Length: 192
Image (tube, one colour):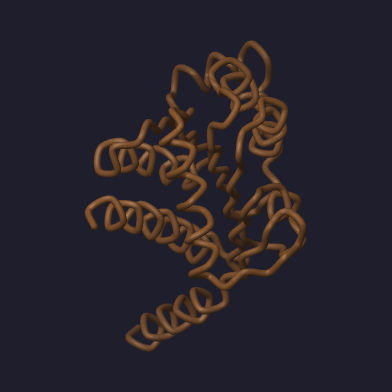
């Protein structure tokens, strides 16, 4: 059992050291540069009165909800997550589950808001439709994905973080850590 635990963390560290960051035009960035670009987008947009919106399914929904709270409570930035149970079931029932992020983004997103779209597979139709709705509203977009490197989400954002694993655990752990890196960086910048 000890070997399994050692191997798990060795593999996790290997994945962490292999995170790929790209821009929408395919330019490759180092991880620190990607964090800096994402943080600059968030800070500049929030300073202009905009908000940050997080979306994701399952484990990514939990990350989205957690990070929306941390961004507004700790980072003092307006941030929301569209993962409330009644919202999801209402939209899912009335429009179909594929529209659960698209419809609230159409209603509540404003030009210049920042959408953080999180999907382990990068293929979740509802997340991709949410990204499309955000594009139409003139939002800035940051994505976090995993599994297949050529997933559609991995090229949909202004800044794209890709975790090269096909297992949910490592992808979700590293997505969560990337988001924590962003908010912790923001807090340190704000606090000098």
